[in-house]
Image (tube, rainbow, N blue to C red; front, side, top):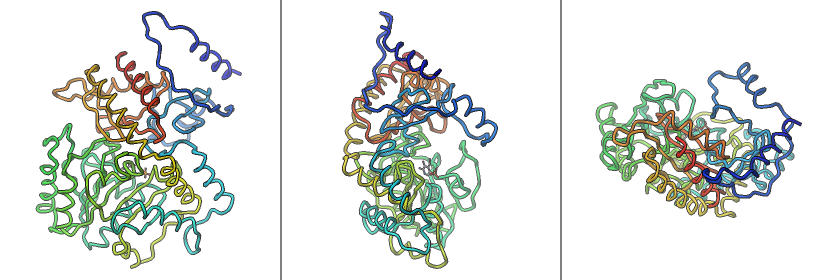
Length: 463
Ligand code: PMP
């Protein structure tokens, strides 16, 4: 009853003409979907239980956290049936749209038929998806190991590099994020806000960050640090190098051009394997390419993926060459649920939808359009220090001083809250927490992009 009243009142508020000197608020593009009536607990009730029964490390966005109860394509609905444009897509986990009917159908049909572990019996769901995934890979990358998350995929990739080379040393890039288990945390953290778990044999290279880095956009200069680590920090032979193509959690940082080709050469000379973490940048999100590493013109030895691969279901994968894959036959290796029929049936449906609906092309067109529009906001709002990214993986860094690049940590929270009030959900990240992360579902339209930018414009004006 109370909820019905709230919904009526908010409709009424929409109908009231705005005061003359206040421009009308931008209108969300129309969308033909009526959320189901919600009869579950309220946000306040959930918060109370969460505080009592869940980890105190869990956090929420917004002064008044949202209770999201339904999703449909690029939109989310709260407990009162209010619609929001989702420009964060569960940190890029949703690639073809929330509850995409074809993905839901594939998952539910398989659930009704069989859900099982992948060990000891045959089932076609895992082989069908592995074959389809391999077809998206360059070179000899065609052997797939399935996991349940990005963390597991990176742990496995690092282990394979160590087994294959017989070396222990791994080089990762500062400000990267590769997962939340001990090994991947070690490869993730250094002077970072993540747990600083020291892992023996993990070295952190200078971040080739064109905005804040020492050498600007000169990728080859940053790459020299990797050579120095090998020369002075290891025996001269290493197990491998791991990096994202665009750092996601780190604040949508595009690695300086020329960095990856130079580093890959150095790593190969030192006998190491190159691991591309495509957990965020893979699966068509960048528009120009299906995989982020392709935009750098390199071919890795091992590729890891998760998030978008399953459009929201727990699924990850490691893809490598038949020769490297052999190392796991030296002992028994299995993953109870990695590649289970339900998740792989969903994954195959995701790949098909990406192709049928030309979502890579859409990410390119809509992403480029939105980036251009955000760049025009930069001329108007001095607080925008940098606009970056590709396709539908964009970042907007807020600073209070352009020269010193002082992070606008508090301001970004106000802007986020105002945007939410106007119906737009956006992510936030980066080492200082002052970067908007824009990673919507790939079905985002130009009209959505316009609405997003108009709302951001108003929210920034309110600062
Ligand atoms: N790699 C990257 C680039 C990521 O962004 C993440 C998650 N944010 C991970 C790995 C870890 O994935 P998961 O949370 O599924 O373990």
